[in-house]
Length: 161
Image (cartoon, rainbow, N blue to C red; front, side, top):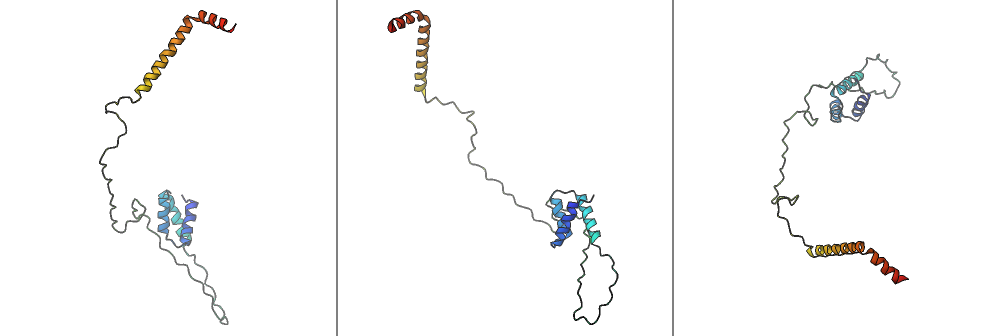
């Protein structure tokens, strides 16, 4: 199926001086379907075939300079069945292998958690003891208010009357 975007892109690439083959590879790398690219390229090449035009009559001799009309060069059709490498570059020469360097091993492993290490003693023992003592003291006051509420009410009535 002819894709108008591909057809327009191929025309634009040819006007910029690229070959049809290079433009096709660009569209293939951009993610277009191979069949759509091939169909559009065939259509473009068929449109560019020169149509036989009637022979122009000779111009009069009295002109000082004859008009020069350049002929458009006809491009040869591209073989689309040529194998393309993984990177979209035609395989013409043996490509050198890329050398991939392995990362250097880390001398000490990184610690993500403290799992498996003995637990450490808490550093704030004094703070914990003070907070426990304060909690027990406040609980004692609460219990005494509960048991001696009548005596406390009498005490505050005498104090403010």
